[in-house]
Image 1: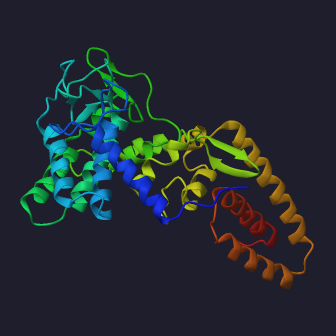
Image 2 (image 1 turned 90 degrees about the vertical axis):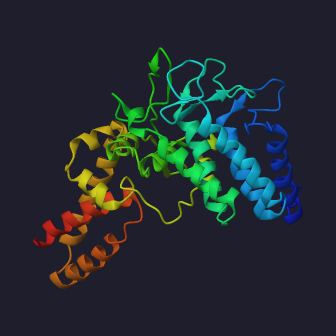
Image 3 (image 1 turned 30 degrees about the vertical axis):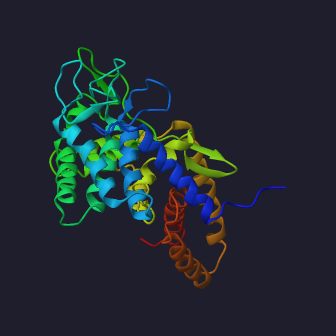
Length: 339
């Protein structure tokens, strides 16, 4: 027998226990939060970003006094403002980005880790959440807003795309950028949203189009979807962004129509060739069926069918459906001799 779903009290306890982890794992001197509960674990800048968000939730839910949450937040933001930036191998960051792992006491780079664009994004998302939440006129809350904006605006996002159409995964002093960039649907959605929205050093729009051009489509149970295997990649961006009702150019039907019509062959070439072949065959089969159906009807019935099918085609609910509908309209025009 399956257990009953968790109730409100269970969820409250889960949230409080989660907050307690960040409280226990934080260095009270600089606010850095350990990567795990293992003895001697270094700071993870991503864990620190999640901790900043947890302080906001704790204050809002009454699990943590607002003043304490603000002071803990200030410790983190002040540290990252004042910590050394540069190409030195033991710096805390470079060009506004930060190293993946830092020494819990000194805040300097440890484990010879990479300057992490993704983990920096999680840290900054936590900082910006704090800046939005702590909106009072009190000096500590005003400073939180100023520091959050400063850390965000300092990041040199275009630098992370040097010699690459997409954002690089990381950089190391003396070695330069890592070989790989952020490709395929993933948690990097958060990274691109922050980079594109930067008020000071925004990513070029081309980098986002290059990223979506590497998406991998899969089909399970007759459902087409953007593939990304790890569960957390579907969660991290959604911690901070409500994507409901939002579509980017990749998913908009007008963009797909332009691609389908051959308006940009370079974009079309980025799609997986095998899936493109399947899509073409499906469209051709649908086109042939519609031509047969329409040609067998008398002019009046054919006109009504065309009007009804145009109305259906206007409902652009998915990429695959719209590609089919675009071809349907074209075949109907030819069959009815309508321009």
